[in-house]
Length: 259
Length: 271
Image (cartoon, rainbow over all chains, first blue to last red; front, side, top):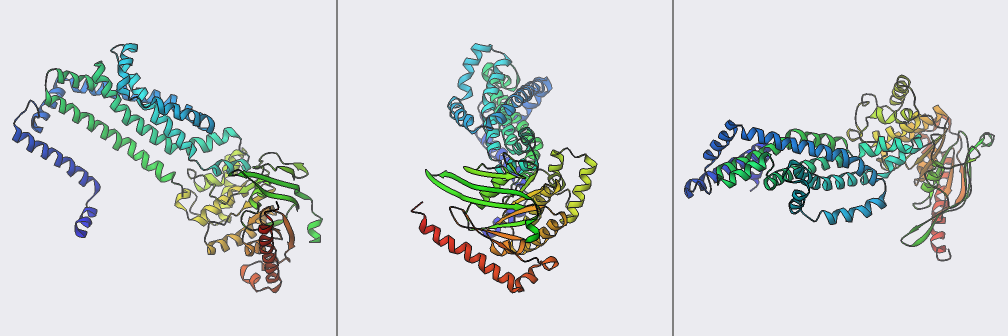
């Protein structure tokens, strides 16, 4: 028991993570090999062939571009609108305490249940996908930033006042940088929830992007394509998370760590 | 002491009273506090926890408002914080996302001191507090004692006429505290600023102060003002603990602070 745990510790974390993914593929391959039902569960090889086909036809690359564009533009708008608003609300405990239960109540309705409404309002268009994304991403972002501001020790602001700092100075030098960990968590959540919202929205609304490719593959019963797109969706988000969000998180949490 | 009385009063508390509510109960933190502090004094305020000494510092800083009575700075009522009265807190108030020099120079930045002059003054202070080589470090990369030095230097940098220190060394270990105390004496002597130093440690109060304001436990009142003989350059921990006069002062202050603490707890029912 002890020796096995020490072996686990000596292996780098990414090797462990990579081998679990390999294991997943092996299990999948074994099951697919024995069931011999490609219409229900295609082999990994068939799936990657389907993926190569989709890429060769240009369908996949175009869809990836569309979905990512929706995610990035949607989240950017969301961040630009929500972060300043949240910083403002967080200044007053009263406003925050009135607003929070209200927003929490609204957020009980999952975004997917609102898609029919968005289709009625915006038609079968990208705008309806944007609405789904905004609805999904706004709430975690708003709450993360508010919590981030409320977590800033009072003494940071109190410490600046006897140095001659006015309220504007304190917002700029204490609340804005102090809320960084909250903003960081919020943006991370907004992107990861947003990504799911974009795919779900595209899938149901069928306007464009990876979700539409999924919908089309289902309509023509091409399970290999469905799984291929699923893999692309997962890998894309892993890349965004590991290469951009994770390093940022490391920087913020090392510098902002309260001692 | 005669020399002290010739100086101009810089901080005054007149019939100060401060009360607040906690769990539906009215608590009197300060009652009938009358105190005059002259420019250039190094005053220590000592008392048991909850005697309102921190509240007194906050009122002088302008971060708190008395329920009744008046707090004056240079003869004028204090309303709100001002760069003329700096404050060092017990909690770590330096900003974790600013480097050592970024934190020390913060007050100068707020005051609009030009960059070149700011950098020069910060460099002097870094030298004075012995943090050379740590200029670009963030507070999380420093020890507790170093962080508190940064906090002290940040307040000193703008050279406010009055510096209020609320148990600034409460969170550092005993050995580091001695070093910080000696550095503080050096710093205060070099800059001749008025320092009001709040502490619950009698030894610390006697070691640092020109005179000691001994306070009673809740409601906080000034019991006695105990002068400390001028030690001159002999104001080191080793010299002071061997001086019989200092020993007598320490026991006197202990008596005051502890004696009243027992009294007032039995008096509480009447209040």
